[in-house]
Length: 67
Image (tube, rainbow, N blue to C red; front, top):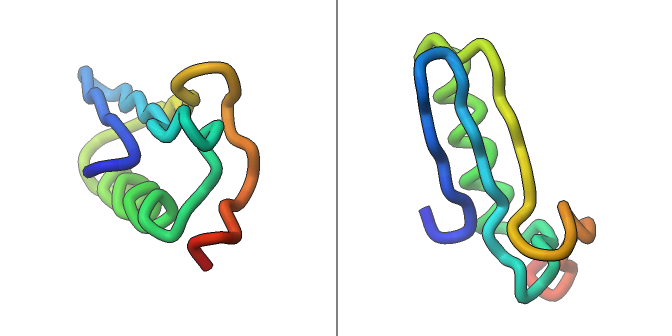
């Protein structure tokens, strides 16, 4: 995964949006990776999913230059 980092510990999964140069704006690639992680969480025993952003901001919204 190129645009997110995932840490899994017990029933907790931590997902970090990792596009700080774009203030973690959601690109097509990031959206696809985030969807894959949430689908995986449905079946791997995850009870808590924590999503955070790397750098200054959590998420600037959509990066329309990629759509």
